Length: 374
Ligand code: HEC
Ligand code: HEC
Ligand code: HEC
Ligand code: HEC
Ligand code: HEC
Ligand code: HEC
Ligand code: HEC
Image (cartoon, rainbow, N blue to C red; front, side, top):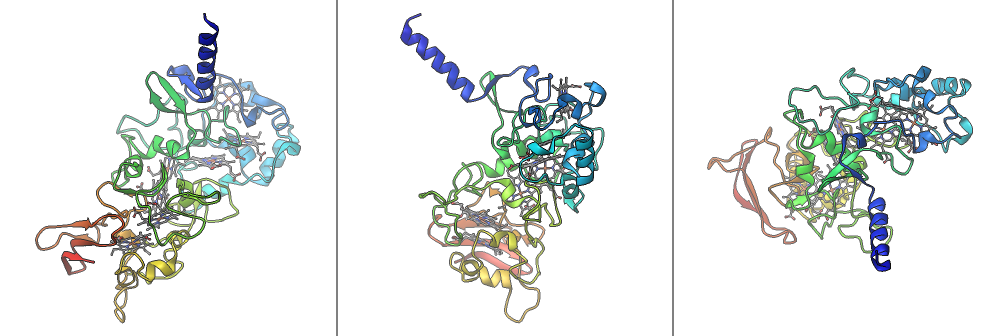
């Protein structure tokens, strides 16, 4: 081999390793085999290694949550693990959060409630429509592989040719169950389809948004990142997660509907307030929205007609919080409320993303819009 070629091939190997490319064979699937890398492999934390989770050294383990909650549950349970010499308190960075408490909140992933469905050998997204839905800790965290920096390390992600990459982005993890899955519930949308950066509009999860001028954004959020400290992309867990700002990171559970971090009224006819649409107002200025800086009829629709009780409507009536495969500005009419007009039309037309002009054809609570423009 010529020296230049040799350097080239070893460079390729380094790049491949850096991209974390792994061969697409079943042995590379998460949780297979007995290699323990990552944070759970640190002897300064789990001095008895495998035995902390595989009780009695039996490798047969079902992937249910109890084993995780011995250390990631209550302080009392954790103390027992420390007394048994299975967990060393000195190595822990910061405080360990009670994930069980999050999961017992009214809106949560069904970790505690669904049993015996997860299989160590399963491949997600599920391709059989009749398989019951589930989510265990090990579906989102691979216990042998995860690190503090990469809590999703160890799951197979995109297929690139004959290689499978490792998941690094949170949304890729969520797509294992909320995108192409054949057993997705009927009223649940395909999140991958909604967040595609080729859509007319989408919240900027996979990449920066379609609209370069979003006037309502509050600091540090910007449509385009031009300076350090500015934020132009967001993640699922910016909206989905614990209602407690000091609680565990991640979408385990919340007291707010939709497993949301902040309150969000989705019904029509609720009075507008800072609290009613707290989720959106966290990033979009309430003053800008109700000041009609973008859509001139925002205040009229959101607060309702002056003097007419319960005539205001939710953002959810017109916007999808994820994305829109049809329209700009995240427009997606909630068809539980909005109907076709007398001419049978239900549509939104925009005159260009920055024009702030468009028109609507629909019927809402008896009010007809026939290409009503703004
Ligand atoms: C932090 C907890 C934890 C530690 C530490 C741990 N494991 Fe595991 N291991 C699990 C869980 C949970 C599963 C099941 C994963 C699933 O079902 O998806 C598993 C699965 C396995 C399997 C596959 C079993 C099967 O039925 O497919 C083997 C083999 C295994 N572990 C060996 C080991 C060995 C060897 C060690 C020590 C070097 C170790 N594990 C350390 C939690 C752990
Ligand atoms: C014997 C105790 C023990 C068990 C059992 C255990 N863990 Fe851990 N885990 C730890 C410790 C200690 C850390 C590091 C915490 C720290 O330093 O803040 C950790 C870290 C983590 C992290 C990264 C958290 C972070 O700080 O970003 C995740 C995720 C995690 N564990 C999930 C699991 C899952 C899932 C299971 C069950 C399969 C499990 N753990 C079982 C002790 C345990
Ligand atoms: C292993 C599968 C799995 C993965 C991975 C997963 N989920 Fe879920 N998720 C579920 C199941 C099952 C439900 C219950 C409803 C259903 O079947 O869709 C659910 C429900 C939800 C809900 C609705 C909760 C409610 O009470 O209304 C939200 C929001 C959610 N998931 C967000 C996420 C996010 C964000 C991620 C990625 C960080 C994610 N999920 C990853 C399986 C999964
Ligand atoms: C800007 C905030 C925001 C972001 C970012 C966001 N969501 Fe949501 N999500 C919502 C709101 C609001 C609802 C409730 C209204 C609805 O169902 O559309 C919701 C509902 C859901 C539901 C329950 C309804 C259903 O269709 O099953 C799931 C699952 C979900 N989101 C998953 C995700 C995933 C996965 C991501 C990231 C890839 C994500 N969300 C990003 C705000 C957000
Ligand atoms: C975590 C911050 C965050 C939250 C929470 C959030 N947004 Fe956004 N939103 C953004 C960012 C950043 C953009 C800019 C995207 C772009 O440049 O197109 C944006 C853009 C938008 C757009 C304009 C999209 C376009 O293409 O014109 C609409 C409409 C919107 N958001 C509605 C909502 C609604 C409704 C909620 C509440 C359910 C909400 N947002 C919650 C960060 C957020
Ligand atoms: C009656 C339907 C309707 C309702 C209800 C509604 N919007 Fe809008 N919104 C629109 C339309 C139409 C546009 C596009 C205006 C344009 O052409 O630029 C828009 C644009 C936006 C934008 C992008 C413009 C910008 O620069 O900020 C944001 C953000 C937004 N809406 C947030 C909200 C929030 C938050 C709520 C609830 C508190 C809400 N909207 C309620 C119809 C609605
Ligand atoms: C639907 C997917 C999902 C499920 C199921 C899930 N987690 Fe998580 N978890 C996440 C995400 C996403 C994060 C946030 C990671 C980040 O951004 O740092 C997280 C964070 C964590 C953290 C770090 C919390 C902190 O603030 O220190 C721990 C520990 C953890 N999870 C343990 C568990 C345990 C134990 C279970 C089961 C009892 C579990 N998780 C179930 C998705 C999940």
